[in-house]
Length: 288
Image (cartoon, rainbow, N blue to C red; front, side, top):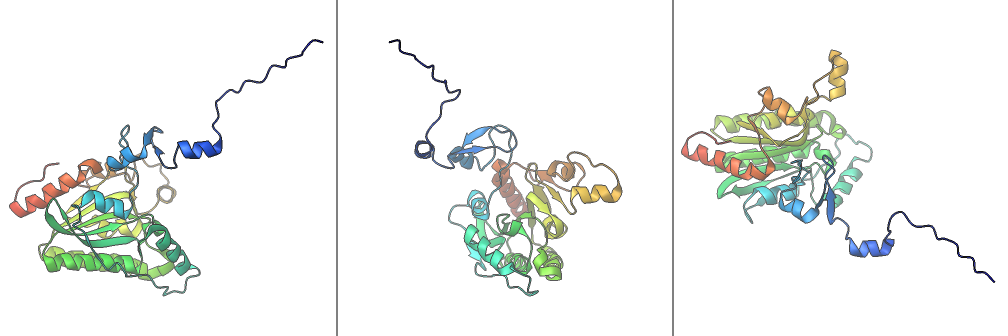
């Protein structure tokens, strides 16, 4: 009897059983850059302050990562960590959403404030966190930033703020918009007393935040590629009935048109800010 052999269909690609794949390739070990699509080891990317090795794309940072990368080790003392939002307008499900973000991010609000040091130079610092309600500005965000400014005034130290926000928090209505005026007045008082203000805009800095304290620094800096603006691109185009430039509302566009002092890579930021702080203590010009 003749044996009939059937030719097995050859698989085009090698496969790894899903359970084995989970063991051999731990989740999060690699990161794909959303800009250049190159894949990197996540640990190496974090060592490079989450700046892509290939295209210099700046991946987002939360407030803890930002503070760890910018301030001297063990120099940070947080202010008003327990300050939390209420629901003054009884907006449906607002507090439930805020509580969900608290558990997800391990912070109580969309900004973390405190006292720290940059290369030995003491500062008051505020870091907005886009992972909490998209960094939206509510009453607590405005109050924490205002109190951080007042603490800088009390200690006679510079005030540095990292902004990242989708704008005012609609669930708090006009109370949110009032924070624009409150923080701006606090900065004016601080400036009149000789205080130094350094604003560092990160992606994205939009809405009422961009139209108030984010743009009121003695030095207005930004990270490369950051989206910075008030109204959205489509709204502006529909209003003026014109097409806007491709790079409109980017940090580079604002620098070109005189709305920023410098666009600085995150890798160089601590050194550059330390230079500004030192210059104001000793007199001189900043080195970009």
